[in-house]
Image 1 (tube, rainbow, N blue to C red):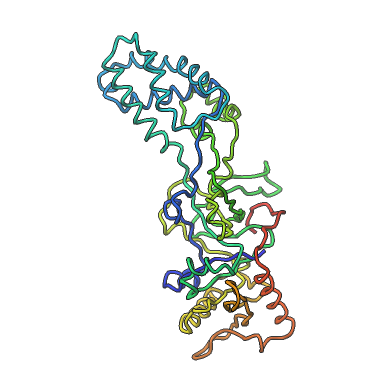
Image 2: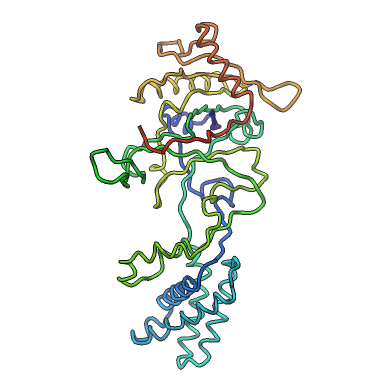
Length: 413
């Protein structure tokens, strides 16, 4: 499978090409405000609703003036309401998907009923005000998940892509390849969370840890009108409070079965239908904490980078710079030379329709000296290499590339 990344002819893009790097953007850095936006719902057992009620009461208590005024003896009295609140919440929600945006009004309504006979009206009012802040602001932050994404396209010929992401055809496209649906990346430091098979002489089958390289699965983006549904209980369960005995018997892990699965695995893979022209595939960085931008630049294995397409309006100066960057990338990689040579192609506009023709130009040559670019044109190639170049050109011409359905276990070599 071939897949592609469009670039403008700027210093940043040329520097990343020279190093064979890709950048994993945070959700906030992407160009769509709806990126990775799920539709949060709540659907679970009475036990989960009760624990949610206790969690909200605890957070509201800690954030209110009641925490300064009241004694520790009054806390159990307040938190004992969680059983009744959980029962009422479950009754109202039944087995339906209850929208998270409705929780504030319903929770405060039920709590006001519970507090009618409360002997601490001041604390009741303060708790209600604090609960609004917890549900509207703190709860959404608690269920946020950090994602870092590298985006590619399955097509190198879409004029809109050339316009939006390659400076109106003044840029270039990097051609990537994969035979198993994965992309091999490496970091200078061990920061990638992953699973590895253990050597045969060690107990167990796998180990979990932090590594400096990984194989990331490429996933196709879907396009539609609605964001994927996510059961917020799955993200809240680790934040609930548990007794030592409950922790000992892995209650937090077992509670996951009390929350119905929705479309959790589709977050970050569903975009509004108007983005369909991108035909996007994505790789997700396997980390679970916030990272500064410089730590999200990863080197791609040379076996995954197979060519470059010059834009029709790419200047001769930038074309020469791109070729030289490709030469420096191969020479400085420190990796084994891939079996397939690095290939160059030229994109030409089709006269009678909005489309491109991709023409083979040549391959990267290891020789570089003054006034001689490290490129061997197609006329100077042997017939076998020339035919290989044409075959790749035909693959690009034929349009969308499909992700291989049978993928290897994502374990680096």
